[in-house]
Length: 476
Image (cartoon, rainbow, N blue to C red; front, top):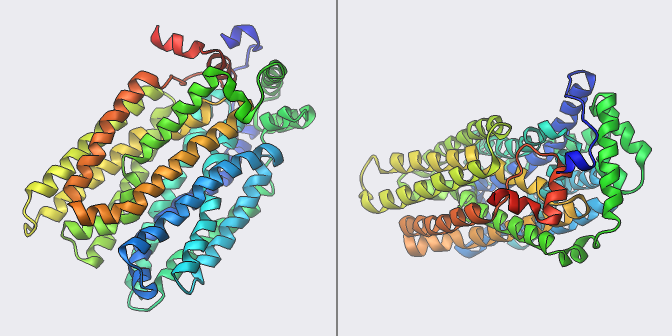
């Protein structure tokens, strides 16, 4: 094991001024997650008035929604590579400016074509943030706090989505009768974009990235800001030795794939990311109002009822974050997929069995949707993002994360593009039965392929993943 081979004994964690600094850094960086959540969730309420003003069809509605996701897929790959070259901090600053510019472009879009391009640009920022922010948090966090700090980004994502749902409901209630109300809904995202840029000006660079570039003195200075001094020096020695060992290994990026264990962990990361999206969680985040309307709510009632999944997302994420430090990742993942698959089956069954004119039908569907979202956020979402931020070795961390999240966004885009058409053609019942079938496959995949990362430092994981030892330990 790495601790006995290269790690000096790491002093036990202690509170102090460094703890407050680390907390402040986390809050600022996770504004990227807040923007991720708001910009992907705001379309839920903005889409209906936007359709009327821009003349969107069912297909162009899907294009407007999915154009952000296609941009996010490209942003995930390019943002990760940019973070390797320029650093995590500079890349997040650039993403903040892109968030701001993309928001303004969406707000002032005069037609469908401009809106699709503007949403694509905004997607580049969303995708970049979805890769770089979790990696930055994982690299700056102490090993015993890594899951908690990295998981806060997922919490901020769902807080951002809830903020979008609440803002949509308030703005829709106050100005819903005015043309262009959707532009006001979209404009709110400019505020956290500006806050992210200003805040990141005072945030230090990732110490692991600095050391990978040979900037040891700067790396130690950063660690001393967010660790006790003795702990900082111990961690620096650990990462330094691992960096020296990496010089004798296969190349970074695509060159690292010559190592079969690295290739395997990349494929596992892709599978995990795609499985998360094929739960259909974002069909609820983007089209929740549509699902609830088809279940029996009127348009205004659906807009308000849509807040309930947003609230349970935040509550579930808080509960999931509390469990991350105590429960193994694989247990959380398996529990999450079992529960979400069960909810898919129940939603499909009730949508089919309850008569369309039954007064209680929309409330039953809403309850099950809330149960699905709660299961997803409590057991699955944070565990997926934390696992992805942990499993890739330092030399390919942003490359591996970028590839996995690229496929995550592609899966997200495909589901979002075709969800309205599938629901129109097949109905809610069949659509959710399809999600349930994919969930069964995901359970098998997690049980047989995904390694455990709980309770280990990034350097320990790197050693065992690069040699394949982590799979032997799991089987044992």
